[in-house]
Amino acid sequence: MTLPQLSESPLVRHAGLSYFPLAFIARLPFAMMTVGVLTLVVAERGSLTLGGLNSAAAGLGTALAGPLLGAAADRFGQRRTLVPVGLVNAALLGTFPFVVASSVRDLVVLVLSVLIGASAPQIAPMSRTRVVAIIRRAVRADRRERVVNGTMAYESAADETVFIVGPFLVGLLATAIAPWLAIAGASVLTLVFVTWFALHPTGRIAPAGQTSTAQAPARELARFRLLTVVAGALGIGFFFGATLTSLTGFLADDGSGDRAGLLYGVMGIGSAGLALASAAFPARFSLRARWLAFGSLLLAAAVTYACARSVPALVVALAMLGCGIGPTLVTQYSLAAKLSPAGRSATTMTMLGSAVVVGQAVASAATGLVVDRLGADAALMLPAVTAAFVVAAGIAHAAWAHRHPAPTPA
Image (cartoon, rainbow, N blue to C red):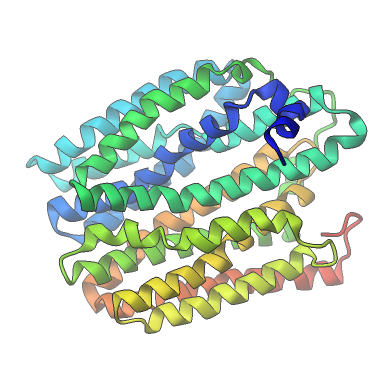
């Protein structure tokens, strides 16, 4: 699509050409947070276990506070919620390097990590809420479904790409200058871009959920078919945490653990490309089939990763992993959008987002323990275990869907 064609889009015309780059950059601090905490604590305190625990603490803080921040935005508006939350988070991130480098007890560092995670601005769901609200106001009824589907595909790809770019930036800054710079950079990005995102004109748009559409009962969120998708997202989180932490542990044996984020970014090559290209897959290549196909590719690549014992071999395996992880995550979000109960789309997306965060946090802590107690070679096998979990969730979803056909097939 050319720039003139893009500017003619009702969504872009109402949001502005600057909106999507701004929303993308504003997500980066979140993706840098858990990896930056892990890298800095390992560098300053010399314990991968403690680093993993702090990364997990930040992730769990985000998962617990995220729905509360979303509810606050629905009640008071995004501007009134994001501006103070962003300022608090920027201040906590800026303080963290000084606290880690000081002589305070590990418990204090853990508490600060929880607070950093709890105050992390929820840019991804806020962005989805804004664009859906714009589409419902600016796009003709007969085109809304197509525009919403395409926009959600982009949003999912943006989320997944940020999870790759964020750690890459952490590794680049840690390798080129110092581990503390990644956290300091996240603080600056939060202060500038989250505040800018909060004050963007689209922040005045009322949430799309504030309509007269009847809302399905909350029990509809507990349907098995939807829960299998949430489980798949949890598996993706497990994969992210196990891969990054095992990679950090392997490189730390040679004294180059701060390069983990840099090598981790190799996954972004195939991941970003295939995630964005997934919108062009033919309809006959169903979402269930995509989950199983790319999940199996992820599992095969994870086995290759487990067998790697050199940096070049790890780079090849990481590139292969990217080809599986991107389309799998986008497919899960697409399924969630289709299976979301009426009036519960924001809640459904939050469930998947929280599952990814919790999975990453838990796997980071567990993998750190494995590295410290059994060694980095043993930890390299864990991404394969998590990939198998993702495939198993896909099989469960496909089996249930086959036995209980839905009115709107995936």
